[in-house]
Image 1 (cartoon, helix red, strand yellow):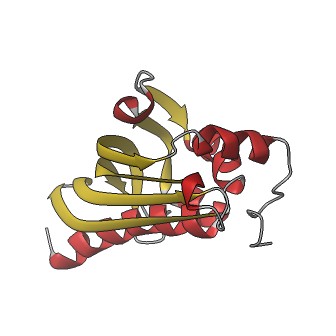
Image 2 (cartoon, helix red, strand yellow):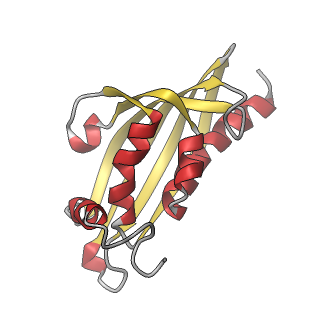
Length: 166
């Protein structure tokens, strides 16, 4: 395990945030393996599942396209590498904005991600995420904007970019 490997793992997860926040769906898809174990049970209460990388991105896309803006800050990566596999815990601060002029339509959460990755020549940094687990420690603001954003994104009102960012 080298410092380069640790940095490459952290950069893969930073691309997770960058892809979401810039709505760069090609970049976002490029960091996932073909199959991904996803556990957002602490956020939404649904059971962990295995999905294809394509289906994961397709499922996330409407929610984020329907929001005006988001900012995911990922910090303090703790990386462990064992051969061709890696684990990384990364702290998260995620801010979501439905209407930029209305602070009551903002939702923020904090917690951390525990991700697993596999070494690959296909990932931009040499690693692909094959497991994502979000643990939410706190929430603030109007969480209902997430479903409102998804509804707006699915209706195509936001197109491929959130209002004001097209």
